[in-house]
Image (tube, rainbow, N blue to C red; front, side, top):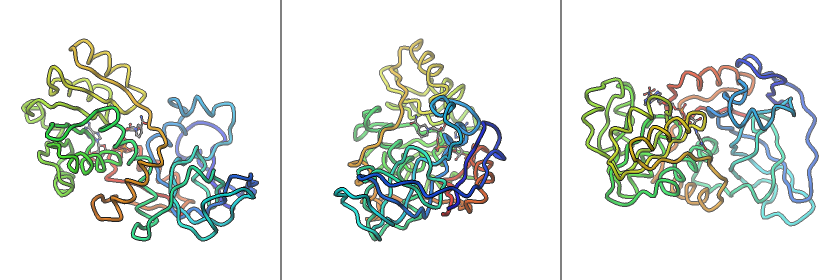
Length: 310
Ligand SMILES: NC(=O)c1ccc[n+]([C@@H]2O[C@H](COP(=O)([O-])OP(=O)(O)OC[C@H]3O[C@@H](n4cnc5c(N)ncnc54)[C@H](OP(=O)(O)O)[C@@H]3O)[C@@H](O)[C@H]2O)c1
């Protein structure tokens, strides 16, 4: 079976399509045919040797990226598994989704409702749980509050806009001009071009800031947060920097690392099935073109999600 791997950290060209052996199946596992795998910034950062992801795998290369998948069950292990061959599933994995086939733990996958396409599901798990946990678990968003979402047109941001709106928040979204109509269509109440510094500075103070850009952007936008407001800064590499700047202003700030949560995955899939949540898939690349998918995600200007097709 075909699999994209890196044998050393470096640029997108380090992703090589290889012929890999079918991995063995343990008793509580199942084999999946990958239909779509999400391409996320963490995949590219880890490939480049940056952040917690690279630290975790540096001594066990070669490594195949890919932390979210939608696919079809091909085979189940010998012990009881709630899935059968032919079932449609999706969820978060611990790497390796950039493969035609992969072996996953039965309890890590969720059933995919018939109404949800493999394509939408391929981009839902990682960005969806991050958006939900950032807004609700870490951010404590309440109905009627004002929430500022930076990178509102991106993978996490475009889902966060819809989820925050559904919770009854007033959503202030930052995008470039090119994405303003897109984000307005997702339900944002105020859409501001982040290049327009005067417009950003005149945003009325918010209760919660979901920082999806981090670094100096995250620091600058702290001025738009109420004195007793909250900040969740999502990019891990600059989290300490943004948290320290927030503390100097007396604002409560936290970083986060998304966690697998099957209840949240089921809730997100139901929302898509019922048409309350849409996953925007802007580009789909073949597995052999994984390097181009990484070049796209590294532009920092992807609309919605980029996927690989199995
Ligand atoms: N801690 C965790 O567990 C966790 C989980 C998921 C993601 N993350 C991190 O969260 C960040 C966002 O992830 P993502 O998947 O949403 O990324 P993404 O899809 O690559 O984000 C792309 C979006 O960022 C926007 N953007 C770029 N620069 C901006 C700026 N200065 N101000 C406002 N928007 C800007 C772009 O909008 P325009 O095209 O309109 O410019 C584009 O739509 C990444 O750093 C990622 O690594 C962390």
